[in-house]
Image (cartoon, rainbow, N blue to C red; front, side):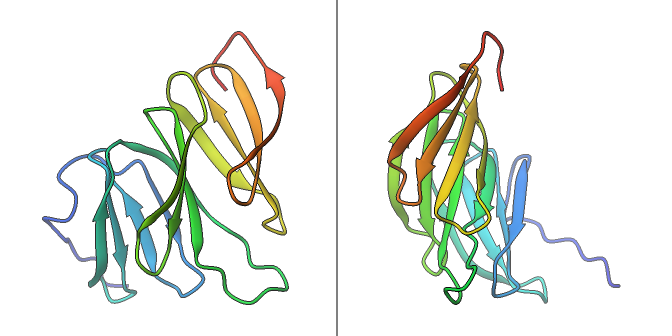
Length: 141
């Protein structure tokens, strides 16, 4: 194991990261920077969005071959779908009042959830259409 330091890609804290099915690492900075890293530590691609990312989740590919979509949630309350190959934002929805804190997929990738500071847990289709809001709480989720 070789530990190496890479400077200049994120200038602020990196609150979340995940592996892609292609064995690359995605990291998201508080400044809205998303970086895709190769296993050798090289920068494969880089993108920037207009909000801080709080959570990231790659869409599962059970029985469908490799998927190319990941979901992020942000401090501006949005849920976003990003194309993994280009890091281009494909869809953006206002999901929560206050920050969206967590995003995750079900096991087959047909739905995802988000939780927010507004105390709600919402269930979304794989294309980010709201299905329902099963939890409404007085406290952040």
